[in-house]
Amino acid sequence: MTTTEPAGLPVAEPVEAHGDHGHAVHGYHDQKAEHLKRLRRIEGQIRGLQRMVDEDVYCIDILTQVSASTKALQSFALQLLEEHLRHCVADAAVKGGDEIDAKVEEATKAIARMMRT
Image (cartoon, rainbow, N blue to C red; front, top):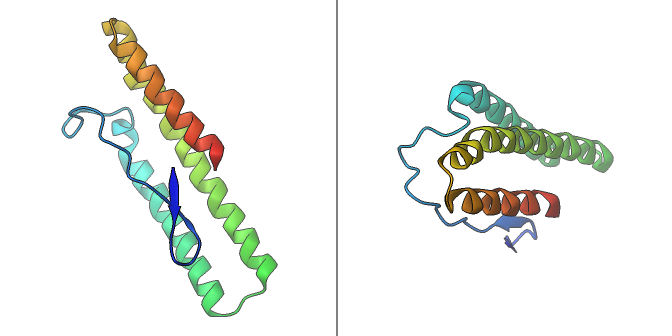
């Protein structure tokens, strides 16, 4: 579920924590440096959008950059989801029991949130 900021932009509501993952090794751990680099690049794109608006750049040019930023975030999310499936869901499947159902449900909800955007 999302809410909106005063500017009318959607803001994701916090997602509840799922267990004690604070010190666990997550699926993205091995690519953490690459992910951070990619997120910094996306952050730069967003800052570029702010500059474009501040400099009164033509609307269509801004929208082109919004699209590029959106695609970059979607690509990042898809990579993170793949790593979650390969690591967390696969690990739960090996352990068996109810944990696999919980991980599949968690991944399904994440996919549903991604599809709504």
